[in-house]
Length: 184
Image (cartoon, rainbow, N blue to C red; front, side):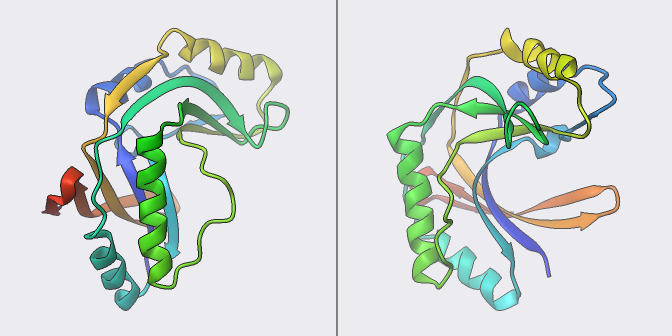
């Protein structure tokens, strides 16, 4: 049973810029270039029936393309004990509305709303036993890249299967702005 999530993909050029800046830090596991995205909603495990229901529900989401501005970097859960390094996006009403509309249609199908607030971000790396010096190095590496802007013309329903070598993400369906759907 695959796990499902909904995301906005980054433009290839921006993914490339992000990857070019990677340093050789032993405590850092970088996100694969093809997997760099902004998660709108994690759904979790889904059987065939729930998968079909989700794809059909998302068909009704109509949206204006949000302009995404990446303007900061940070760590989850915090800078003292970080496990994730991310690039943060400015909140904007069009992106928030898209997230809300997705949550609304999924809730109508019986998926409970996420309880934590939406923090638009792009996970760049996972961290383990990282020193304060390396934490500062990570933020310094990316400070000159920011800000970056792009327009999200689509969002994507992904399935994800965990393997010993990391997650394998598969595009299940792509949803274009103004509800023009592309089947993948």
